Image (cartoon, rainbow, N blue to C red; front, side, top):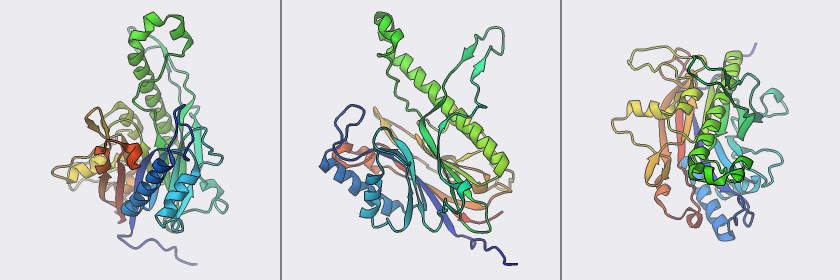
Length: 355
């Protein structure tokens, strides 16, 4: 019987997440506004091509893609179209944005040969997500939410790293933004604008926060179900629109115990570990940000990993090598003219090194 070949020790594996800042074909409207000019589109393709070459990740997760053609053009411009399998949602035609991915061909799975591992875009929340409560104490009013799906569908795909290893499951996510939801067109608002207009920003921000929290809980439910059933190494990456210490992140990660002693060993079967924290624990002066808003720097883009990628886990398969944030372009004033996105690129690097 043939022996399954595992990777050689120290074989690298890397992931990167990039918000494409509304990557669309030129001249196509964006949310009712004029789209990119030919010059702006060309600048976006040129900048992205340069980033693809410079970051050189094995697996890319993308957000805010309107059409597949611009992403294909960027990989061609980078000279990498033969090296990667692009994963874009079928039927993506500019009517909405979607998450996408690019996988180095040596890791890509043939969906026809392994249909159960084919990429899927998850629109709806799982039935186990019930956000209703009569109140857990006499002073708490009842609450009931009727959110049924993700504002941006979550992309789930799998990698075949080596025949002797389980597939790695990757989720690319884009949660609801921190910006306030527009409520001016709602029937209740129009019925009494004088009462609601002074509070529109607060109400809209609350709605966005509730939606983002629900999305985090929905993905957490999906992850718990799959990680318990399949036990596969898992990566979640994308524009999660909240920082590492937010309630949203606490819900999504499951808050596994962090093992701070050098000789500690443990792990969590369903928890996720933030590579931002993993990098911070090994750096004397770690400063990272992926977004600048009104002069305030923050990290909205993340790569989260299961215990298979956590150094102090007994179930570790890959050793953490480091995290980088490519964010120099965030200091440019005009992203449209320069072709730059308004988010940094996050990359996490690992090496095969079983515990």
